[in-house]
Image (cartoon, rainbow, N blue to C red; front, side):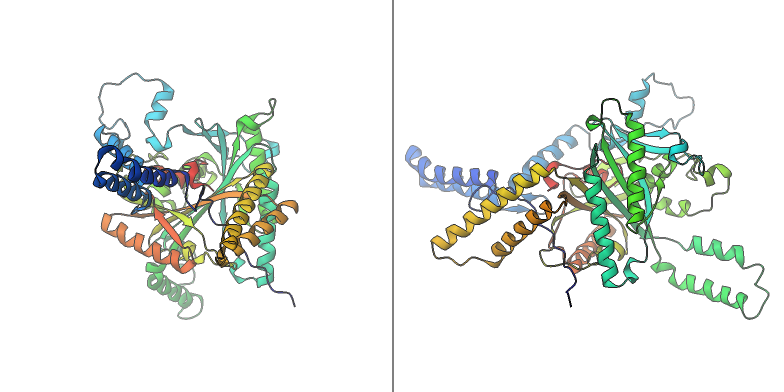
Length: 511
């Protein structure tokens, strides 16, 4: 009898240079030792050398809550202070709120940039009409693409929903995961694919959908004392009792193409739509429930929901008009996709009337994982929460270089310990085995991905936001996540990276 497979996540590459230290702390430590020796000789005072050496040690090793070591937090603090000094931490959309106000002549491109906050500048939603090849026979709703002018990418968004994965037998769950691995492997080999990911929004929701469904069916059966009428009353009572625990989930997959990697004669919009349709077909073949690429209205509603969770009740309303049912017009009449205001603080960002705080999963579990291990972080959402994953394929040549570099580093560290008679710790031996497994998987045709996870919590007040952050830390610990870190000083940029737009945060987080 064979044992079921166990999944492992590689530890984050920390860029160690020597003695287990990165380049920046290594330079600080070397500078501290040099100052400890040289400054007393030059100044004749040992106190000066000790003070400078101690300062270098503090900058290299003392952590700042939510911002990492002091040498990493210092640039963030300077940036935050500079923004506050220049009044660039607060932004309001220039909407024509006053009738009769004098119009200011601006170019169309400048007006589009002014309607979006700085973290979303350069994004625009394009409309691509459907053709016979893209499903015009069964839908007239256009396909929406997000164009990032800064990065030169086109991103398609696809709606997805849960399936019966949690009810499957363990063997069937592993088969589904293997099929998803094949989807990732094939997608990484497509020309032009820059990255892909998903964004799961979860939050409490009123039972309006269920009540509307019940209201449509109850009038014809409400006269009976028993049977369907009694069942309808019992169901309504059940909804009333379960209303505080009802959670709505909104899952969006996205796929970004780098237009600079496409063939010179390829039409970027057609290539992006075709890549999205191919990705959707692969996901369906792997057992995922994925729809066609979203329309511009669907994309705008998804972005607005993540900026202002209060619109969730509006989105659950039935589409009354034909245009709303077809997706040509949003039920969010008069509201555009982006936020109307943004106010950035060191430890949070206020978007419209909601406070947001974004966390970064800095270290993943190192033990073996089973299917469903991340469920506490995904589904146990007592507050408004967005979990976003970004996956970026690593070229095979870069993967081989990384594997060789990791193998040489591990072998040298183990050799130094053995030479001096020190015990080789288990984590080094396990890391060596993982490097061997990665090399075998690479030769088997699998593709390595750089990945990161961001978790955004939202609340109406800062006190509620602190409570939601505490609940998130407990859920992450229950899932086995060893380190989750708030991205203080850059919550506005991190929040933008949780949206299904294809925009990613700093490269240092993606390893």
